[in-house]
Length: 77
Image (tube, rainbow, N blue to C red):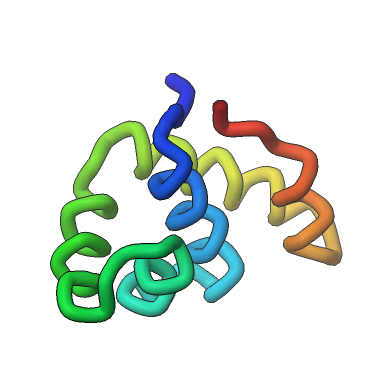
């Protein structure tokens, strides 16, 4: 299932680039408010489509030396 929301896509990309450990920081980088970033990250990480996109991206990244290269190759839209 494709992610069509640009903020969700930005969150997924930022979350992957943080090593899947910094949901709040990823939400801020994706454009969510600093006040609500933690709540948004929690909500997004529970979203099945977001989870699937993150897992798919992690699988692609595991086969490359550079996370940015695989990240650039995948279109989530």
